[in-house]
Length: 458
Image 1: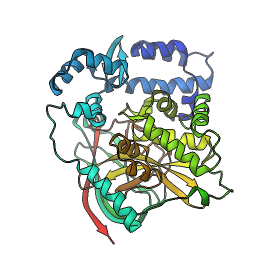
Image 2 (image 1 turned 180 degrees about the horizontal axis):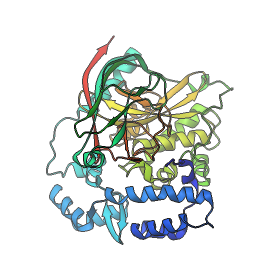
Image 3 (image 1 turned 120 degrees about the vertical axis):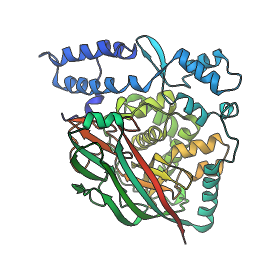
């Protein structure tokens, strides 16, 4: 079945919303199935309800801990943890939660989120190792070197492997599967890309600049297959310090349109944009106001799967929390609402210490062209009191990036024929079996990114 994500902008009937957020997912599904079989329900609403069936299937499993289990975990992990602390965290929405059958359940990463974002809890962590923050040191060094040298050049060699878990293997054994493995998009900061190894022989490899680039494999799954690619490229990041006084009067209008369902100029987004930008007319200064607002007002927070949200920027703007991609989408949407071109870039953040998924943004101001903005890295610098690093990420990027998507919500080179596990981004790949997308991040399949080599170039 083909899904059109734009229909997430259609309103969900109130009775279904009540059932959904009370955590009565079984009854919500029954009501939706009844509406889908009715001749009186508009076709556009049926498309919205079909998407909601998929969303309802994906939400509950991400909230495995009831209140008592979460409390026990906190007492075990943090020194002198008191019960009223959890209630306060819950009331202040510092721990992501939903109702399931009327009972509070916390997100699978709620504890990890506190450790990442709250120094007061890290200092009370009974399992914590009090060592130097290597990533922080690396980023601080990069800011200094970028300013001194004017350009950073790094050669990155990475191996990506996708394999099914035991659970996924049971679903797919003897079935035809299609596997999409992410590859770098050869544009922007990427130079001299080379694909060294790929296994097995793919059905197709998307072109160098394809917006969400993948190698596509098709096979009957026997229980043993793994899918891998090893590549390298040169990442070149020039240090930019744009001057508002040099901004041209004539500016382009591309990448300023809405893109449903998420990049949407709702009344709240328009009001928020006006409040942030004010009477400013210089596009570079508009962007700086937006970036400053997000990095100082939006707190980092892990979120459930992107596919379960119907308007990400409005969620971030109203709750004032979100992960890297959520913050990037709010930035892009506010920039476009202010008439400044902005677009998505995402993939991996890869250093000798860590390789993981990450999202950020670009914006265009003539005569400077495309500039970078990483709101979550800027927000992290703000929390750590590093204003120089926060400002740096308002126009620049470190060289430890592997861009695998240049467009948000773009299809793959071969149509998926199903609602993807992540229909918006391309970092862990996808596996389609019997018309359904398998769940990644270790549930049905896992994606391993191994840094083979990282070489400084001069």
